[in-house]
Image (tube, rainbow over all chains, first blue to last red; front, side):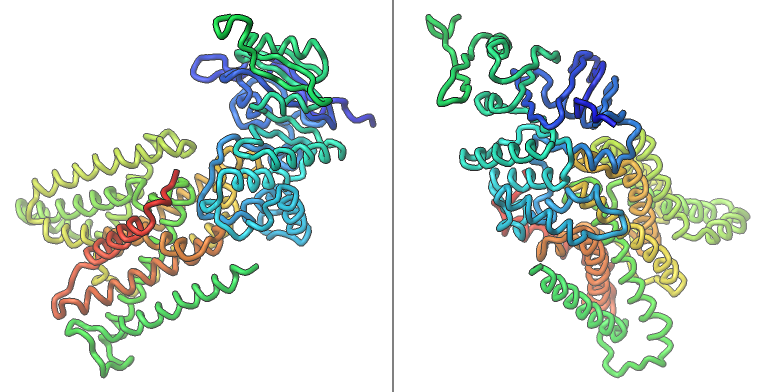
Length: 264
Length: 336
């Protein structure tokens, strides 16, 4: 049996909140074993798209996960295949970091069973990857914003899902930890994991394999990050205030104040 | 992991203190501390023992309900009464008292009819029915259990309206006020063996159900979206735990009246010592609630002996004082 080329595919996906189309009907697909970043101006619907893909919002349309309709999957199976990391660092302050990461193993456990030796091993590995193993005994309320984000990242990685959706995974992270995160994602993609991440920082978004540009609840463009067409679309979406340039072998997005200053 | 010994030490301390309190509960009579008591004494067996046991059970029910409410609504200020059960129970008791007093005062043939009917259901039965009615009303107003904020607001509204109705009844039938007052202040004085058996029968299955769902409550700690992305059945969890919460609260309120702060403070006391997952947290909160009410019961008897202080006054003063102290001690660590 030939595996489907796209790990995640949505047809006619639409979200309406309070009578407003937050997500216009759209068809999107994300290639297997590929890292796609999602970018666009504020309010473009990036977070909504991720939540709709994960099934956390009332949405119309079809979503296939690894070639199977999402609604036909049992919740626990879906949770094993599709991991989601939210944007807000929402969490109970009294829970220990190690216990938070262990929550990511819930989809692999029966409800009457405690964590297995394998679960503990996975937690140790992913906490090592995001460099928060030393924080495992500390309650969440005592961590800084960046430390907390690393713990939450480890929680999402602990699911070990073949499809990983992350909303602003780099929020609060300093540069060294952003670089660590890039390496982690590269490693996951090399193992065949499909990663979709909403990114605020455009230069980091351009490090992905593909970029999906959103504007006003629509998909404006989807294509490889190195493609000049993609760069033109990016400039268009951000109101011609952004310019993409090559720097040291990577694409970098720079603020563009225009020729005569900000009144372009 | 290194937190395990801490947990055991903490659990053992609660257990030892509970034994000490129960012992004191057997020793404390209406004349204050009674040093040459013996178990064969009918006063000890028929009054002090069920009362002590009952105080522990009522407190444990409130402690468990408080921990469940705080976990389910992800709010450290949630308490067992927040779905309106307290005011519902109050209205139930007030209505029963009003029927009896009014019947007795106005139409004497009515007494023969009204009294057996009301007493058969009992004040506890009326309180129980009132508490359940109020929770159902809250759920109805909130159009189900899936929206936390709407549920909490409905609970507040139901509480205020039913409280007003209770006050109205008390204005209309002032002769019922003294009995009503002792219910509102909370009292462990009237707990007998049947009440103990009933509370034990409610506590054990409630604790079992709550523990079975403890891991899902842990999943809820990162927010509802994350919990659903982990495949947890949030809808089922809400309905079942709201049922358990309402059952525990109604049972405790029906037997011991409106005891303030135990359900709020017990989980806080546990959490302030050690960061726990919900399994041990639920168990320790129940044990802590039992200990608190058991200790308050002893104090209530001994403090002004031979007069007895309503135990609810003690728990309100001590619980409120504790929360204020905690607030004062940790000004920098608020919930964001």
